[in-house]
Amino acid sequence: MFRNTFITLIFTIISISICFGSQLPTNYYYKVTHVPIYCITTPCSQYRVHKLNTQDPEIVIENFVFPNGVEQNYFSLQEANTAIFFGTIIANRNGYNVNDFKVKRVYKQLPQGNALASTDKYYMFASSGIVCITTPCPSISAILLNIDNAATNVNDVKQPYEINVPLFDSNWLFQKQFESESNRLISVGTINSQGEVIVSSSFVRLPDPISSCPALPLLKCQGGHVTVFERDSNRCLTNPQCSNDNDTRACILSVPTCPTGYDLVSYTSISTCPAYNCDAYFLTKTY
Image 1: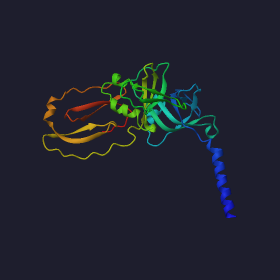
Image 2: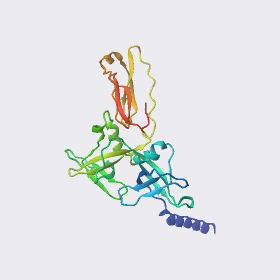
Image 3: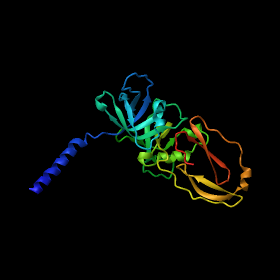
Image 4: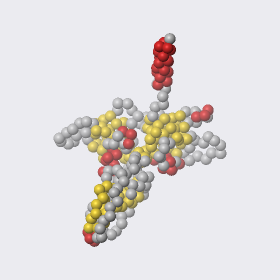
């Protein structure tokens, strides 16, 4: 009898899984828009989301439910207009005719991109697995977001930031293109006839970096020496060394400036001179 009861219980669990498995919420990528309306009653829905790469109508959102570790100030009110959310719509919350959005991942648009083109679509990138000994080589897979089995092999991805932003860290951005899927950047652009993705702007997953930089050893340099560093593709300082500070006499004393949307950061480089970068204002400070 126990055996029959056990078998019945297992069958019931499997049946429930089959019935409800297909009803589990599905996560998609959405562009967010803030609508500055004034309300005197609640609910007051000031946000709209649009499913990327589709003709679906906008969906009105009352609240966003964020994961832990997200700086929500970068995604509220007007700041939401430069955001992409990956997550699920929660329809008709608490019986109201409004929707919430359960956010799984957040992405923020890098400032100083180019204007969107009418042909632009939203992509992530990965290795295509193709290896060539000559160029051009379709070694990059441009994956169309929210569309099943929609990937195109391309020869190159051309970002606008190295041209538009002085002291921009292109090594960091390149690394973002090929990280694990959950941490990759999103780019909006057009594939041209040469097999190149001409990117108008890109969105970085936050927080960035996803994990804290490794702790550095505390060096005690002798007199006449300074601690110098390198900066890696996560914007972390690495490889601290002691170097003779006599070389600082050859350093340029002027301090550069960054365009709107970027903060100037600096460290003492291997040359013993200050090294500067312009990092987007919403990126976590790493030093």
